[in-house]
Image 1 (cartoon, rainbow, N blue to C red):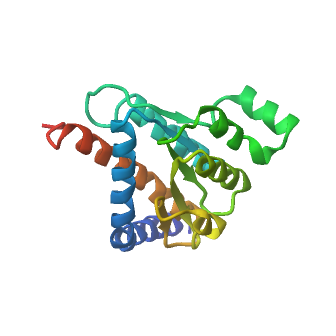
Image 2 (cartoon, helix red, strand yellow; image 1 turned 120 degrees about the vertical axis):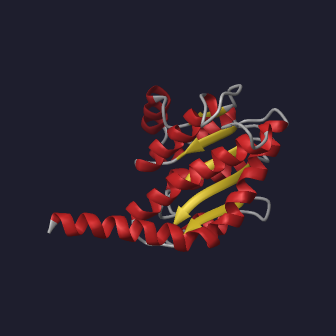
Length: 198
């Protein structure tokens, strides 16, 4: 039984990635172009999300500050999920809803990009972070699923919505991880050319 369930997970994940490729290729390309422009202009990328999406935020920041698949200078990216003192102070003194938005207000500037993860598209603290980013004339790249939820309706035409066409959280997160790698690769190619691995 467990073996068959494992095989089913692999097959469903592979099928979704294949089906989602044609749907997500354009918004992923748009996200790369948006981030490339920001980084080229000396701006930075802030990332946030909850649970597994918090890990995705940190994964993305690590790939930019460290490296993805080639040696290069560090790129300015920051996960808003890592400072427990800030998050617990804001959560305690204000509300959990504001743990990311306060940081966007503190660190975000015109021209920066917020990378916002929410598998449901309805995470209140991520929505608050998006609101704060838009108020600061930042652009937003939102990674969602399940139809995009409230976040899909918040974004402007200048923002990018990468909505995984699925309702299962685990599958959405798996595609989010692949999307992160596509974006990191795209940024490296846009900044440094295609020959980094040769």
